[in-house]
Image 1 (cartoon, one colour):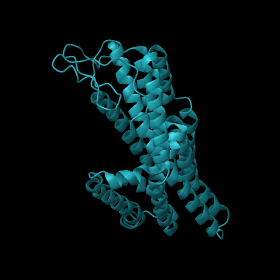
Image 2 (tube, one colour; image 1 turned 45 degrees about the vertical axis):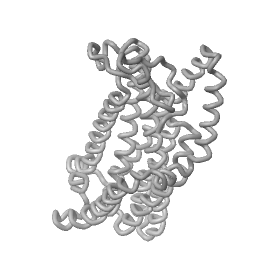
Image 3 (spheres, rainbow, N blue to C red; image 1 turned 60 degrees about the vertical axis):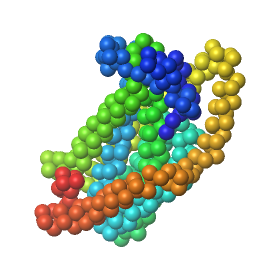
Image 4 (tube, rainbow, N blue to C red; image 1 turned 90 degrees about the vertical axis):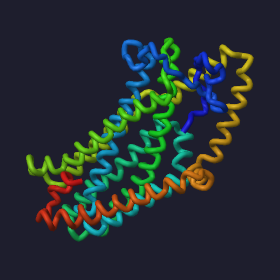
Length: 348
């Protein structure tokens, strides 16, 4: 996902190819590596670049905590809620898919990636909170099972839409932060490939994301084994951990707003090209807004690579559904004689 705002920086050219400095049609600089300079040395990174990287790491940590709570509860759905847990998981995936195909990109386009992340986290937190509320309903009145079912399914619908918005927003924030970081490093006289920046940011995100997911999945087993806490308290803790990142996310830098500010400054200093750039930006915004709602469907229809990538997603979905409903809900409980689902978190 490429932001419509061109990066306000002068691209550097190699001695071999004077035309290799920009990517055709994108308005983005193609940065090159200086063999005599270490672009990854923190001492050579300017303060604005550090701020952008810090904001990205903050986003990664908050995203990881929120989504880690979501997948932790997803793994416990069938084990703790029984058959309704299977329906809840199916509803979650169905609403996630529908939102991804029809509208998630539009919301991110309208509100921006930072605000989209906060919105998606809040809706995902509603899914996690549904486990806590469902546990309370059964504890208060065992005859009100129907209310537990309503809470579980409603939470899944909201959480599925939220997860879709969350991932689309993460991709946009990732792309924009990478571009800004690369441009700020270049402004200081260093040279770095944009691909190297995205690779490094991607590695940072993956490490934080997977580490948080493992810790949060293990949390339920740890709390039951060491403190003997009830599932209502555990789901309450998951709910709290999923809600807190929503508020902290609003304190993270809005990289798209920062990029827009940089672009406006560029227009003021380049009056000759300002009108053309502004017209092009308005055209791109208009086109993007009208097609964003069905961007995923257009990609599936028009991109020939999509049909070859689809089996990976399909197999991943089948394996995840099998693990959550059969392994977590049936095998672990019977093989380990674990009716309280103590070790579900450990084995997932």
